[in-house]
Amino acid sequence: MIPRPSSTLRSGMQPLAVGTILLVSTILRAGPLDAQLWPNARYDAAIPTFEQVLGHGPGERIVSHAELLDYVDALAAAAPDRMRVW
Image (cartoon, rainbow, N blue to C red; front, side, top):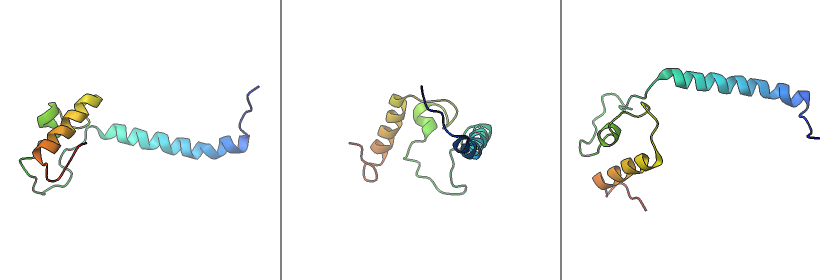
């Protein structure tokens, strides 16, 4: 027979479960991420954006591991003095 958690443990986890559900629902309602993290900042045009490499913005769809590696490799190729992949 599998031991069941005590009622004290279960009731203590309820606020954590509710908080997690609220956090996840807030994140999902936010929609796709805005690629410009710092408004009015000047970005280096030589560094490719997520959309330029993968064809869509971050958060618009789920990417595969291979696609993510393609983006990391593109970043490393564009700025080898600032990023290295090994």
